[in-house]
Length: 183
Image (cartoon, rainbow, N blue to C red; front, top):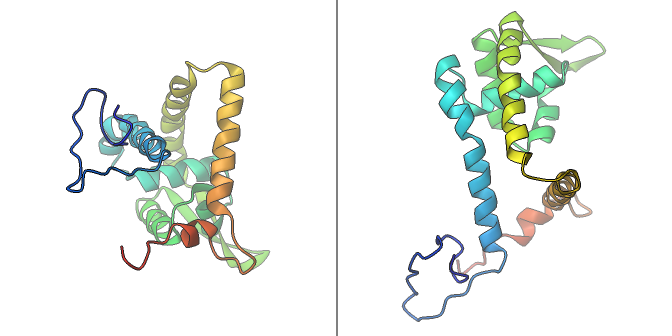
């Protein structure tokens, strides 16, 4: 891979900009590989589950989380996934519409709505859980136990960095990555 272009492949020519100067963050290549990893991780889902069970990726993620964490509320799913609240809400509505999730008011906190799988949701969860486990096991199969632990630590550190806020609760990530006025 050309060090000046984080999106290039090994041996692939890189076109220089008009001024001939290529300036790329040294971390951009890692970011692009991380994005590629994320996209590749969805392939078994889209190839093996999405069409067969008529479920979107966000619906799948919510179904799997509700299966692992019964009685969750939507805002808790937002926290666990990092998916925005509107996307979570839409996925939950679709799961409910298809009879996969039931939404019930929490009797101890009337403002909170608990999410649980219906019988159909539990059936799908039982089918999809082994596939999810196989993907995770395959992904990490070439790493030694200490490398898995280090990878988990790195992921936790990166997520904590992205979720950090200032004293007023504003996202440091969004503040520090805001485009310049000239962009």
